Amino acid sequence: MSPIFWQRKGPAQHAFSAVGACFGGISLEFSGTYTHPAPKQSRRRLSIAQRAQVKHKPLGTSGGFGKGRVVTSDWRADVAEFYDLGPHHPDDIPFYLAHLFGPSASVLELGCGTGRVTIPLANGASFVQGSDNSEAMIARCRRKLEEQGIGPAKAEVGVRDITRFSLDQTFDLIVAPFRMIQNLATEAEVEGIFHCIRRHLSPRGTCILNVFNPKSDRETLVQGWVSTDENLAWEVNHGDTVVRCYDLRERLQEHPLVVFPELVYRRYRNEELIGEAVLRIAMRCYYPQEFLDLIEGNGFRVTGKWGGYAGEQYGTGPELVVAFKDGADFPFIGAHS
Ligand SMILES: C[S@@+](CC[C@H](N)C(=O)[O-])C[C@H]1O[C@@H](n2cnc3c(N)ncnc32)[C@H](O)[C@@H]1O
Image (cartoon, rainbow, N blue to C red):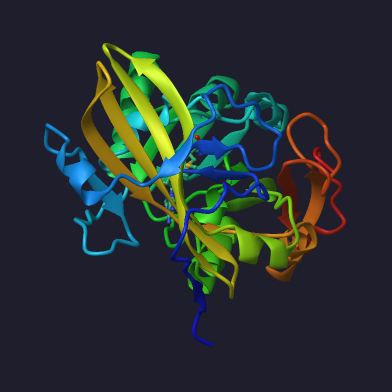
């Protein structure tokens, strides 16, 4: 069946408040769960004439869902520099550290980005292998590892597509923090990541995946997500500039349910716009039972489930966090069960 695309044109809509979402490291205030220090601001997109007023060359455009704009092979090439500036990263590091078997544990991180979780894990585990398909994110991660004196015996990161890679190694813990799996929109990609998890999970190992918990039912989400508004997600001072991140929600696919947000990063000096970079990503949506069914349908056995990183019950909090093991390993009651 061909996918159905929902694209709304017409007058500006009010910002929709239905689903908590993280887009490439930005947690947007949809669910009302995260606090939002940035000033509330919503406005229409910049017009072409307004965009032409950008005095300097735009920083560029990354993205795979382009509409005639420049598309690089690394969707995050122009936006990686903004990732660590985002103030809405989840408080998930203690959770992942608590799920290490101990200092002898080896960890595989899928979609490690700039190393937000990789670095603390490397300090707590015997070895962390990070994979990400963005060269720009990996370059930043490598730089941070180097700065912290974490060498290749403790952590290694590489540019790999986590839906199809094979290392000749298995790991005690596999993680994909900050809703990484939601970037995989197609059945082939989702199938691919589960194959990779199976291939790399040690017989008694645990994998933990996380997605956001949609705040509204499916129909409300489908009807209300798309908007012509540009919403300010956050703003931070950076050197002598201010960086503002706006989100746009122009497109939604119903089957399977995927939202396609755009993140627009703008840099200002003395309130003059001096550069802009855009990231277009997919966020496939899962409801609580659907996420469990996906994991079990791929032959794994759920051993733990949480509704967030503050002890929320599964299905009631902003996140869906699920730990699982190889289904064939049924008699073994592991450390994380
Ligand atoms: C939201 S970021 C999370 C980064 C990091 N895990 C964290 O928690 O800060 C998602 C990451 O997944 C990566 N990613 C998306 N699709 C991927 C794929 N098919 N293969 C490898 N990495 C991918 C992106 O490049 C990005 O760095």
